[in-house]
Length: 87
Image 1 (cartoon, rainbow, N blue to C red):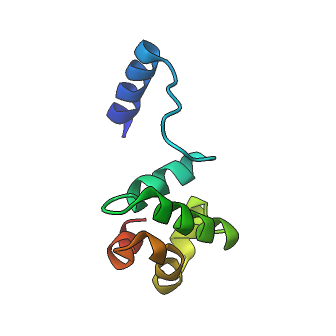
Image 2 (image 1 turned 45 degrees about the horizontal axis):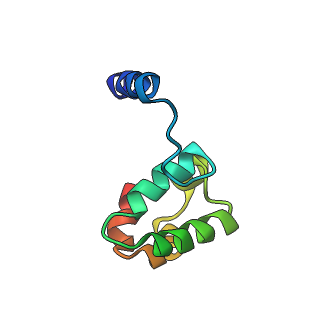
């Protein structure tokens, strides 16, 4: 992970903060990156809204949530069974 962080810092130092990925928190950005695979962003927004409403947008909450409950929340993003295992 350290190598990735170092690469990110070098890119950010060179190009500045580009603010290109939507998300209010780091966790939301990571979850959005997973959920956007093979689906339209509008469907990811629906899934993130579900997660936010259910207070599931934290690493602790995601880790402690039953898989079935997580799948239900992210269903709008498609491939929810596969994505639920990754999130």
